[in-house]
Length: 82
Image 1: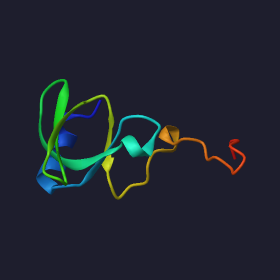
Image 2 (image 1 turned 180 degrees about the vertical axis):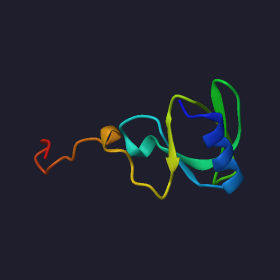
Image 3 (image 1 turned 45 degrees about the horizontal axis):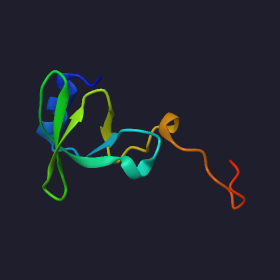
């Protein structure tokens, strides 16, 4: 779970974040920290919509590469893992 100090630093710096929710990169959220409590974080997406997400997700700067443990295996043309 992400700490209050890290969330506050992201909010102050205005860091664009990637929130990794599962292994599929299409389900990632991009946005900025607005507020948080003990169980959730309010993120303002670039479309200006607010979403409330669980603090248990992976929060990282968007400039960093996506964690390998949350990446789906690459598929070949035959549909088998590479």
